Amino acid sequence: MAIQILARAPIVLGGRRVLKPGRLRWLRAVAWMVSLVFLIALSFGPAMEGIRTLLPKDDPRIGFAVNVTGALIALVAYVLLVRVGEDRPPDELAPTTAPSHLLVGVAIGTAMFACVMAVMAAAGFYRIDWHGLAPAWRPGGLALQAGVIEEILVRGVILRLLWRAFGPVAAFALSALIFGAAHLANPNATIVAALCIALEAGVMLGAFYALTGRLWMSIGVHAAWNFAQGYLFGAAVSGIKAGPALAQSIARPGAPAWATGGAFGPEASLPALVVCTSVGVATLWIAHQQGCFTSNEA
Image 1: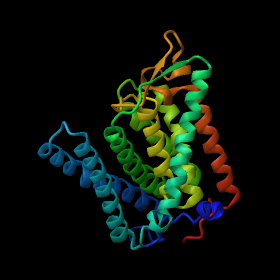
Image 2: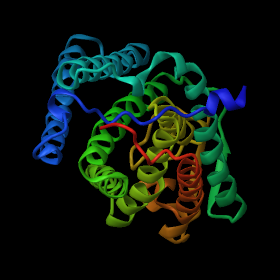
Image 3: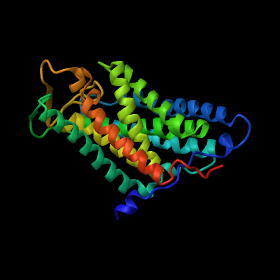
Image 4: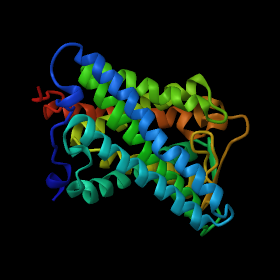
């Protein structure tokens, strides 16, 4: 069963229509990447603004439904655009592997963040105060929406098409830097925080995509990490408070920012960097051993 869950499928980079072999294919891949990011963002951005304007803002269950709707819009937009622009089914979102890959991803993401907090609590960097049950609608919706939309855009579009244009090494480096830089707009963000995000998440989430040939495990890890961080432990998620939580994680006064992540939250801490980068490097090594970086596509 475990072998079936982790069985890899080859990365499908796309090789037809706009990505067909020929002159300036790398430039066409980059142009298509930019177009996809713009069109997918355009598909859910205005729609979400319209929905939020029409619906009540004080009901967290409605907010959760809006988050789920945004994720579904991005999924549908990606599927349709890939079919039209690349003349292929989006195998990276094959539904047959979704349940098992999501389950494994959720387990990995939750375990990683729990490990980070256990290390920091044991070292005296954080105090964790348990508050008991709390509504999970807002943190759950935010985690799900971020997991789906960011993985589609960063791994499904940016990493894949940079890989098509320049190969896997450049694709991993550039997509990780882009992912980290995108977080500079978040509250309390710093250059150090962005670099941590790039190394610990940009590389690790891409590694799961490379290993499986699917986006589902990366989506599960991403969503579960955010949910565990914001809801289970009540810490800031990339500088943003997720809302009601089971606990509140409080950095020890006077503790250095490198140990706690400062106001940005645990993601910018050394323990998170070590744990996530270690998982990412190990996953990359497994993917390399299994030949995941050798594409048979034309």
